[in-house]
Image (tube, rainbow, N blue to C red; front, side):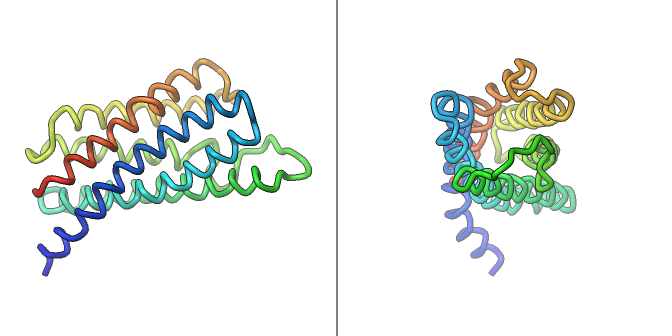
Length: 203
């Protein structure tokens, strides 16, 4: 029964990883490029893609956990808990931004979001999970070694983005934009798409 469940969920996990990668790229395009020409549209689209990316990312990480659990045991579960926490934070953060884009508040606030302050979950916790998964993938021969290395890079960039947003309030600062652009346009989408191909193959 356990083997049947693994085989069936694999068919959900790998397309979820591809969709998470696509949503991550579209989020970056909306947040960085579209928002410059049309702030309202960019905010709405970035919120939508962040929300959807959190949902698809959670599904992909569950599939990754199932693959890693036999050898990773409790460490794989630890990575999954942090990964799901980061995905949930991204979903809530995206939903919050989408709601504000559809019905803008009467008065803008400079206070950090209570849902995901300065991207603690979306970037910080997700980065920790990514590092943990990358470590476990590096110990599993069924995953390409370079995919593990790309995961290390993604996790490090996510944590740098969180720390930059925590310390530097301006989202337009080069110290924030540079790691965010590398992660959002290249590293994170590439990792999720590659993960989808890795999960598509039976263990």
